[in-house]
Image (cartoon, rainbow, N blue to C red; front, side):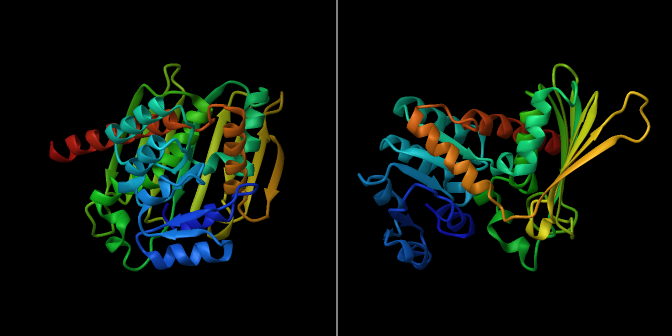
Length: 323
């Protein structure tokens, strides 16, 4: 569902699966995606989720439709891959969680950054113990927008549910949870510094676990030069993942291992110059989940946890702005 840029990317990463139907309010977009694959075309997603030949529904719409379509697809017995953030609010995601409980189907939430090779290698190293005990992470993620950005759907809170915090922010929040765990302490602020729009263009986030491990995060659509940087600090080493390919620069992971005498660390670097394979790796894992009856590693619980943090920061920021 949804045949825009992300929908087309998903369609190109199906691997062993076959695209059988496409739906978009813009029938022309659905036709353009479906035609080379001889897939069915509709401008009504409700028609597609009822089809007997559809086993998995990919929901790649604007944020205002993610939860509604996901819940309906589950109600018709379909498995679902829904793009992040999965919903505009905790209340919306809770309705999808209830629909999944009733259906017994599987839902994967599209936090595809976990599937970038640099992040997967970083998690492998972290889990192996070579980094030591986790201390903190520092993440920065941003882009510079484009002319007319303030008139796009992301600038309309009714469609998006918020600004940069719910857009790119949920990615770094999710990655932080992946490495550090749950964050009972949440603080942050959202600001609109440049774009003339009713949602935030910058979010500064501080999260802390019960063990006082901390995530310092900044997301921005006033970055001007696109940037992705995620640093993971342990008691024995530091990991630094940067770049996502394309305009974000070459994807790489640096492993800085502290030596017994300290001083300059021993550094090992991995570079990943190939195209973005995260979408294909992610979907292949979900297919395997469905076949094995296995709960997806990135699921509605992860989406809900990220949205709880997003809502807490929006609420805190509103209180501060009105103080």
